[in-house]
Image 1: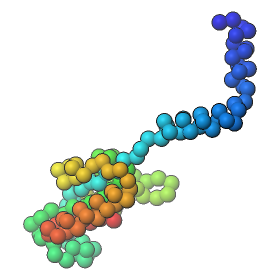
Image 2 (image 1 turned 135 degrees about the vertical axis):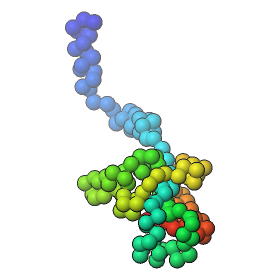
Image 3 (image 1 turned 180 degrees about the vertical axis):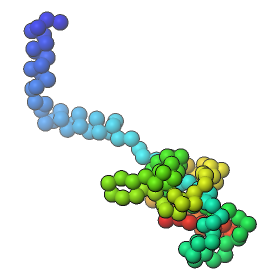
Image 4 (image 1 turned 90 degrees about the vertical axis):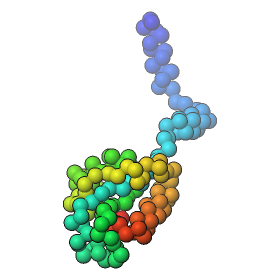
Length: 147
């Protein structure tokens, strides 16, 4: 490529784009760049010690001591990523990203309990599913914690 060609390309790159082309280009680029966010529900097994706490007994008056304690949550992150944040006690500039209950009593993920529901398209659906799972397990006698 000659020196003149390089200079012409630089000048062309600096030339302003007409408004009509800018809008069309913006929409095209925007639609191709935006990735659809998926949401997930997850279930974490908690230590039996959690069932002895006052807040667990208050939230689960009909708990069955033979059944495990669980935490039900939802997130735009995968269940594995979210579990890691809970256990590490992750924080950002706005505060903690973890549940204190999972941080203190969390044992492991229970993928058999949530895999059939994931991924979920909207946050609202994920929150509804979280509430439905919480009520389902509470009705079966599990000690459940959910925010």
